[in-house]
Length: 264
Image (cartoon, rainbow, N blue to C red; front, side, top):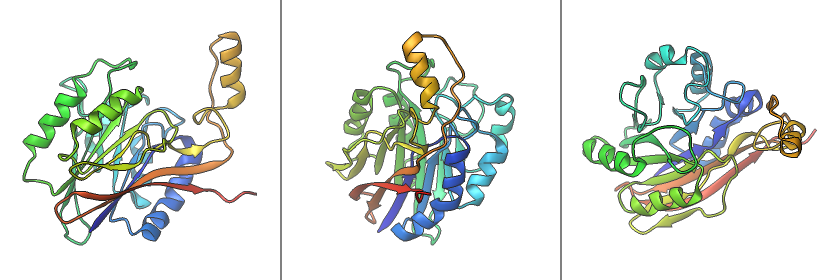
C-alpha cells in the first residue's frame, strides 16, 4: 500500500508557516509516502517565488503544483525552469516555461507517482487547452513510466471537476480539485479505483473570505469599489486529502484531512 497526502492551496504567510511547520508531521501521523501541495497563492496570496518553493520543499513537501496565479509574481517566468519538484498547469499554451508534470520516486523504492495539474475552462480567465484532452494525452504518453497518478484540476465550476473525475475513473489513481479554497464533503473512491474530491480547500487563514481580509471583501461586495484584499490572519488550518493506493495504483480509500492551529 502507498499513501498520498495532497494539501489544498497554500495562502500567504500564514499558510506557508503552517505548511512548513506541520505538513511533515501530519504526513508522518497519517503514514503518507508522498506530500503534494498546491502553492499558487503562497506569495502574498498570489503566485510563488523560487525562495518560497525551496522553503516548502525543504520542509518535507515533495511536490508543488500551481494554478491560474502561476505568473502572479513578477519575473517568475524566468525562475520556474530551475525549480525542481514544481510543475505549472499542463494545459497552458505552448511556449510557457516550466515543467508540465512531475514524476516522483517513492522514498523507499515502491514505485513512481505522476503528478500534474490542468486548469478548468468554465468561468476562468485563462486561454488554455481542453483539460480533459490534456489529461488523456499525458496519461497515455507517459504510460509505463509511472505506477500511480495524481491529476489536479484547478477550476471554478464544481461540475467541471466532477466531470473530469468521472472521465478519468479507473485510469487515474487520484483526481482532486483546487481553486475555490473551500473544502468539499464528497471524498470517495470512484469505480475502477480512483480517489476523488471536488475541492481540497486551502492551507491558510479561515477567519476571512477564502483567505482574504473579511472586512475588505465585505466592503467590496457592499459598494462594488475595488480595494486591496490583504491576506487574513486568524483561524489557520491545513485542508487536505489522503488517498490510499494498492500495489496496482488503484485507490482503496479517500479521506478528507484537516489540521487546525491551537487556539491562543
